[in-house]
Length: 551
Image (cartoon, rainbow, N blue to C red):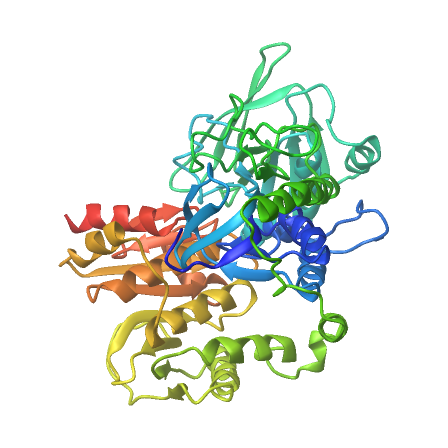
């Protein structure tokens, strides 16, 4: 039993459509449910701008769809915790889930941990990731405005993202290794009928290369063996977006959970794994179709199948019924009203719902946080002032000030997070932390005010040993769902060590930095203005990188 002894009927790991569906079904059945998510509610589907194949909903975005699922789960009493699961003890009747926010206990667990974009391994793919090679159209599409773009893949995701990229690209060329698309004919026909998309079937990418940025690519027809190349035009650079499926996010799971050779979790028809009381749902499972509709189906099946097991454990261990989570009709009504309220009703940066949520978080602060606004004459500085005024009004534990101007090489404008005594935390935001980065900003405030997020002792020990000054610039797009984890990891490192600085930079406002570091994908992490890393990074990865640099 863990010291915290927070016992739930069900803990769901992952808050994508599968996890949210499981939470809805189990909470509605009057069980106590906790959903643990380390990044952003909604999962991969939140980066999809248009969902048109979900039954009963003619058209919506991935974020809107999952926001509704979350509100529905919340209305039935499901609880949510933002934390990273570090390890799990699953063999006993009472499971123990170890997270960065402490330990939780549960009678049942549903693993809805999803999958990550697959990399193909062609020559130059790793070297040019972030400098022409990308994996998320929503996150990086804007960087390729007016350029030619190649999309690698022939499935639904590739077709969908290829169409999306026409909003930015001069022209899109799809590279499909099969003799036809592998998605629905109706969707494929839409691509074939467009003048702004060219399709090459039976074709594979062999190599990309370039001088800093991708400006050369080599392709091969896998039927004839014939090769052809493409070189950038007058401006040189072009994009290569890879949408070749996903890799299950299972490497970190306990080895006793049975998986196939590709790493997907093996389940029976009821989504049960080889361990009693442990189920899996969504893209992490072996299945022929990975879509939102199949994910929510998996979650519903897993939850309803798990009910019997949970009831048996209640009886076996003589555990009283957990009544904390009973649906409250008034709460259901309240959440529905909140969900239907339009954010446009708020004239500021934050909706009434978000303000209400933030007030609850700020109430937990142990100390005051001083926000120093380093401003210039730009329009962005005016936006920052308006944002800080809204934040300050939510809590007496937050105060923003404009310090006296100083001569420095500081990137302006900036929001510097300081302790109550005025000392800098080493954490700064360049831009208004809206979109997906509002969570990063709130977590940073929480870490500075205390009590702050927990961190593994070994990682903390590793970071506190650093004596060399380290500056981490994390360049982001507010539409990117992969950026927040890297931002929060860098911030956490800064909150642990006085020798580490972490800066979040919204690239939309700093084109000169995009050009300086040749950034064509986010997140991009630049250390001491020299070492550049692309792609999502967790706290362990960030710690390993800066420890190596610090020597």
